[in-house]
Length: 522
Image (tube, rainbow, N blue to C red; front, side, top):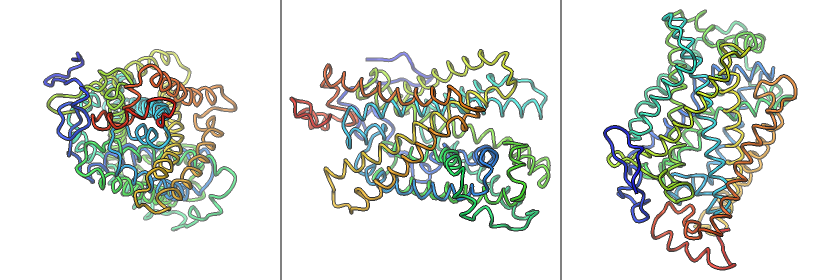
């Protein structure tokens, strides 16, 4: 089999059963490429630190009117650390670019794994493509304000899409190096904002935003719903498990490290910003300035040059997140194509760089279609320049976060299922206590997001979108379950390899599991 989706200077190879999923196989991803630090940067890039401070933190203050935002990051970090206990232990046993797909298939059944894979695909695609809305707006605004260039948001978005697409068909370590530089610069800017905030402190170094009474009150649900979006992408370490140098150790270490850094850094930064603006003014200032609050603050206390640098890095922060989510989607397409759950050509990789070329180009194509569609729809919109932010970005990223939270809860249940069958010497804490608590906690956050979805998408009062968007996400998972049943009945040879990574040995071992009424891979 061959493919016509070949990037310049690189050929693609077919994905034969005998070639996939084994170290050194020409048809697999690039093996032993990523280190733990590289993986940590890829994970953190998806959450975009500067974007979270400028957009997420200020939006949470503005919408909820609560000061206890920093504690939300601490609580959510603890919850996701519990999730990482079982998730990390399972990642040491199962090496698959499909991550959620493979884990759910192993712990809950093959059909459920396919449902999870479809849900993951639409959720990650929604997160990635939605980011082009705010990226295009931010880049277009900066070019007009600083260089006098009137560039439409969609043109700026498509320029970013082209760069992301080129990196997507290149070696993964190239993306990791680009991301490492961008994330390091992001952290530097946020640290500068934190230091300036604590130095200015118009109301003194106040601990009021850290008081439990400012968090455990009416509106806590909306705070948690907003806050969880800042962590999306933390689970992506397992997606690169086939490309890290020591998957059994690297993925758990990178996941724990990323969760700890994200949680502490966001909590400190949210507190510092409140101190810098003043706890008594942070809510009003956030409502007045929105995401521009950080840049207004820097202009007042750091000067024009620092503000310009921060705005450039805000754009590159979004670019890093786009690259990270693009890589995740490309690997899901690769994993599902490799196992023939989706068309097999999606499993094609570059002959020399082993990048998931077909999956990358497919994701880029979907992004082009949706960005173009929103560009046409917004030509005469009354929302004006904010159209891509209030529609493409807000709708899709919140829908994507909604789907990913549901997947996290389901994966926690899958961890319990896996270790019930094969404890492997792990303690009860790893096998079921931590996963059970994380499943319950993540399920609660999922419900909170659903209840507050109209608030998250900026709707004034009840909105049909608050029902339609979550329904589309969940319906995709249901369609995946139906497709899984179709494969079980009509293509048992494909069903037998669900979640195995296409390894010949695993397929042979699994083949007997689909025979007769005693099918254990239900």
